[in-house]
Image: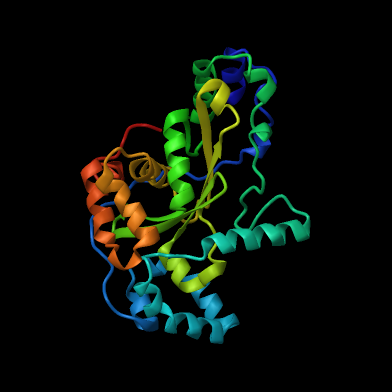
Amino acid sequence: MAGPLLQAWGLGAALRSRAALRPLGLLAPPCREVAGPGPGSGEAALEENPFYGKYRHKIQELRRSSPDVFESRMEKRNEVKKQPVGYSNQGEFIRCMEEKAEGLGTKTSKGGFTKDKTLDSILNIEMVKEKSAEEIKQIWNQYFSAKDTVYAVIPAEKFDLIWKRAQKCPSFLYALPRKEGYEFFVGQWSGTELHFTSLINIQTQGETAPSQLVLYHYPELQKEKGIVLMTAEMDSKFLVVHEAQCLANQVQLFYATDRSETYELVETFNHRSSEFKYMSVIAELEQSGLGRELRPGQVSDKS
């Protein structure tokens, strides 16, 4: 399907092999309803989490293989709640996995994500330098519109704002509407990559919690063309495209906002953890309308 599209834009070899861009999940009917996480601690409380079932296999595997580690994490669960909600060691996890991947001589990190996913592995940068920003935007959007993934072309000024804020506040808690309520995901910047993993994943697996969504930002054309290209990889066992898109949209909602009250949530999460309230994230999400397509009866017609 991508072949005729590339010919229509007169690209020829501009885009690299499609083999490097595997299908990243299927669209699925979205879900509704709202509820915050309930109180409780220990294994019984963990099983009361509405998203426990999705992670049951990995949790039980950890309990069987490393019972001491499992019990230790259950004991620390109350301590985690006192930290910024969802505060994670995901940055350490990312670095750890990169080191392990280098030791194994592989280009694929845990979870099947591409290590060192460069823009040149997707796009012939030298060829597109002859094209205008609008032409490159059309090429990028047209190519990825034929794929089940998240993608965007971000104006340079907006990415500048996101990037400056990400340096000061590298992590944040995002809320994803689900049938059972809201599932919380922690987003952690590592360079220009933004890694997401669910809060329950962090609570049960700690620093080994794998990423479930990675947003790749490419600033190579930022100065010359005034745009930053973005695409993603995700674990389709846990997220579908509409859900991943909702998380990606929230990055702009919280990091690129002109509304000081909205960005203040990000600052509070990173620097004044004791003051952070997860319900404020839900309130901002509801006010923005993001995630509305994930609710029954409001599914978007866009593919």
